[in-house]
Amino acid sequence: MAPHDLLTALRDQNPLVHCITNYVAMNVAANVVLAAGASPAMVHAPEEIAEFTPVCGALTINIGTLSAPWQASMVAAATAANAQNIPWVLDPVAHFISDYRKRAAQLLLAQRPTILRGNASEILALAGEAGAGKGADSGDSVEAAQGAAKSLATQFGSVVAITGPVDYLTDGTREAQVSGGSPLMPQITALGCSQTALMGAYAATGPAFDAALAALAHFKVAGSAAAKRAEGPGSFQVHFLDALANTQPADLAQVIG
Ligand SMILES: Nc1ncnc2c1ncn2[C@@H]1O[C@H](COP(=O)(O)OP(=O)(O)O)[C@@H](O)[C@H]1O
Ligand SMILES: Cc1ncsc1CCOP(=O)(O)O
Ligand SMILES: [Mg+2]
Image 1 (cartoon, rainbow, N blue to C red):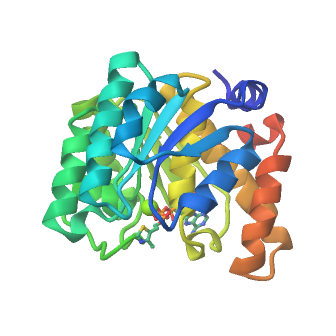
Image 2: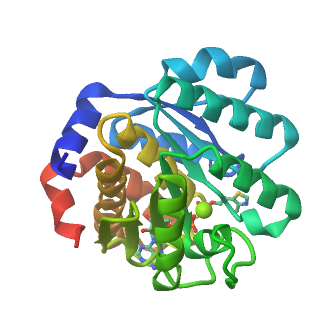
């Protein structure tokens, strides 16, 4: 499905997206998903997963502020999504910072996410390659992680997206790149997490590779538009939400290469 049609479908269908995300991203990601045209719900309690995940159009799992009860919810939600053929997206935020988080990320990856999205350091480390990542921000180039993305895509049957100055997307066979955006984007926390949440919204409306591509393009188009108006990271954030809402379906093709 073309990105144009996916954005139109997103706004027509207003899909419900189950987001298990971190404390930092909770508000930012919910506003991003709303501005784009979908309906986010941040639901974390293990007691609610069995009822809630199956009624959603997609699930997104982000380990940014992981703890044991949330890990149980993540595993249960991924299991429920797989059982019901509900697409789900994994964001392995800074999974290399501790053995606990590393293991949690590998266990979720073994559940074969529909889409895996991370920055270059996160994707490199998931594939067992040494990188320069220290925390939530990338220390590596997108180019350096492309081989890792391809092998993860093949091994787990996932569409893998690496975000950065130029985003890279692969399913192990097909590849795409998305350019644009702004250097202000990595200066605002939780934009990567929000990209993950938006990928969930798009995945509820169409095939995984096309959905991930449309979500990447939507961010790059909105980021470029917001940067023209912003005076710094603070005002960029406000303009970015406006730009996500104002992005037209025909704009998306311009940033895809
Ligand atoms: N230097 C940059 N120029 C343009 N866009 C960028 C740049 N760095 C990151 N982005 C964009 O910012 C968003 C978040 O990506 P990224 O910073 O890689 O994620 P994370 O926050 O998980 O590290 C993505 O949409 C990506 O395309
Ligand atoms: C700073 C931080 N610390 C734990 S989660 C988080 C947010 C990370 O967000 P992103 O990966 O989108 O930059
Ligand atoms: Mg991140």
